[in-house]
Length: 172
Image (cartoon, rainbow, N blue to C red; front, side, top):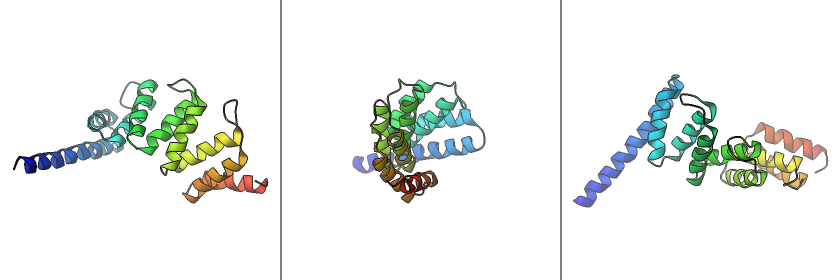
């Protein structure tokens, strides 16, 4: 009996958190970003990685909350650690640009790789760009860039298709 009650309470709790995420999305789409921030905070605090990611976007842009790019980075990290690939991608962007965190292109490579391997085609494309351009910390590798652009293209990224076509025309 107690086990059944605990299972029911758990299932009800999951629905409450899903509702707060969905309610936050509705509030956001209706222009009420302060309410969205409150509700995504609740869903993030309860382990919903999508809520952490979306709350990170609000903090990054200062929508409904005081802009705080360091807090955004922490929220993206939490969502990434929880397996939410958009969080990995966005954290990679921050590390690439040094926005809210110390610039670290090697960390950006790791995060884009995780995002790409997890099915985030923007991660594949941005990783391809890093290899295409090269830098002090990243050895230029246009063949690897072409492979990544191809993967992004296969996943529906028009930018990936364009990058792949350009490198193909250059003989890579």
